Amino acid sequence: MKTLKNLNYVKAIVVAALLLPLTSCNTDSLTDLNQNPTVAEDIDPGFILAYTQLQTSGERYENWRAQLIYQSTMVQQLAALPTYWSGDKYLYNSGYSAALWDRAFTNYIKDLVNLVYITDPTVEGQEEFVNYNAIARIWKVVAFQRVTDLYGDIPYFGAGKGFIDQDFFPTYDDQAEIYADMLNELEIAAGQLTASASTPEGQDLVYGGDIDKWKRYANSMMLRLALRMVKVDPASAQEWAQKAISGGVMQSNDDISMIQHTDGPEGINRNGIGDVFAVDDNPRLSTTFVDWMKEHDDPRLDKLSFVQSGGPHQGMPNGYDASTITNYDPTYDDHNGDEYSRVEPLFVTRDSPMVFQTYAEVEFMIAEAIERGWTSGNAAEHYEAGVRAAMQMYSVFDESLEVPAGEIDAYLAANPYNPASWDKQIGEQYWAATFLNFYEAYANWRRTGFPELTPVDYPGNRSNGTIPRRLIYPTGEASNNPEGYNAAINRQGPDEFTTRMWWDVAQ
Image (cartoon, rainbow, N blue to C red; front, side, top):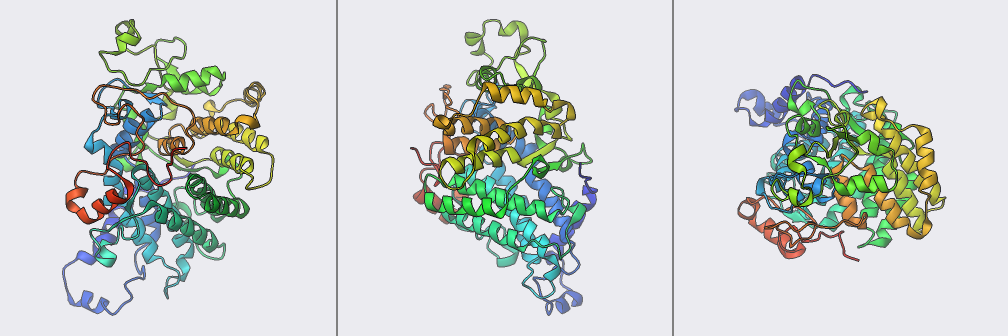
C-alpha cells in the first residue's frame, strides 16, 4: 500500500503555485519578467503530480454521476430504481451528463497541462525533471482518454492553456487527431523515462516513482488505445498494438495502475465510489451481471455479492422504478430490495483503491491481438492468465476477497477457451474484469459489442430505447464556446446519447 501525503498541504501548495501569475504587480515581479517563464523554479512538481492524480481519480461528485449513475447502469453491471439514476433508464440529466467534463476541464486538465509545461526537459534548467515530465504526459493521456471516450470530440490541443496561451475558448478537436496525439505522447513518455534522473517517489501515488512500472503502464495504455481504433483504422491499430507489446506491457498484478485512497482528511483523499456507497443505498448488482456469473459458475460472485436478507445471489433488473418493479417482482414491497445483491462493502469503502488499468485487461488484449494475427503467442494461455489475474486482483480491495487458486482452476476447466468465439469470450471477461472501472467497461463494450446487452425502454428515455453511445456535452458549451461546439456537432453528429463517436462504428 502506498502512503498518501497530507493533501491539505498539497492542495495549498498547488493553489498557491497556480495563483502566482495573478498576484498584484510589484518591483520584484517586474524583475521576474526577465526570467524564463517555462522553468519550474520554486514549484515542486511532485506536489502537483500527487494532487492531479487524486483529482483524476475523482471525488464523489463525478463518480456518483458519470461513473455510477450513468455508465455502471448503461453497461448493466449495476441497477437502481430511483429515476435520478438516469443511466439505468436512459434519461437525460444535464448536470449528471456534464459531471466529468465539468470536473476535468475546471480542475485537473489545466493542472496537468501546466505540469507538462513546467517540467519540459528540453528547456534549460528543466533537465532534472525528465521523469516528472514523462509521468505527467502519461497521466494526461489517462485523463483525456476518459473524457474523449465519454463525449467524443473535445477541446484537446488547446485545452488547459488559459494561463499559458490565453486560449480560454479552445476549439473542439477531432477524436481521430486526439487519439493520434495521445499515442504519440505515450511513446515519447515511455522513451523519456530513465533511471539516471530523479523521480517523484512518494509524491507519485500510483507507482511511487517506479520507472519500470510507468514504462509498462505507458505501453499498456498504448495497447488499450490501439484496440479502441480497430474498426476505424485497423492498420494503425495493428501498428500501435505491436509497438506496445514489443515495448513491454504489464507483467503481473503488481503492475496494476491504481491509487490507494484513505478516509480523509478531505473528500479528494477518499475513493469517490466508496464515498457514494456511504450515502446512497440504492444500487444493486444488475440481473445481467449476476446471471452471467451464475451461468458460468463464477467464483467471483460469492466475493462481489452481499444479500441483506441472507438469501441467494439475485440481481435487480435495469429499467424499473419503485412503482414498476412490482410488475417484475410482486414480492418487492415485502423485502424492499433486501433480496437483491448489493456490492460487497469491502469493495466500496472510502479507503478502497481506485483502479485505472489492470494486468488482466492487458492479458485479454494480448489474446485478442494474437487472434487478429498481430503478434505471436498462444491466445488461450493469455486468456487464462487474464481470467486468473482478474480473480486474484480482488486482494487489492481486501485479502479475504481473492479467489482461491483451486476455484480458478475449476472455473477455467469448466469454461475452456474457444477460439471459434474468441471475441465474445474475451469481451465478456473484459467486461467482468473492469467492474468498478465503469469508464473502461462502458468504452470497451461499445467497441466490442460484448456482452450482448438487452436495452430497456423506460418511458421518456432520451435514446429511443437503445443503450446510449455517449454522454451529452454541458449545456453551457453551446453559448460559451459556440464556434467550437458547433464545429464538433457538424463533424461528429447531433449532441445526443445516440450519436456514435469516431471509433464507435457499427459493424
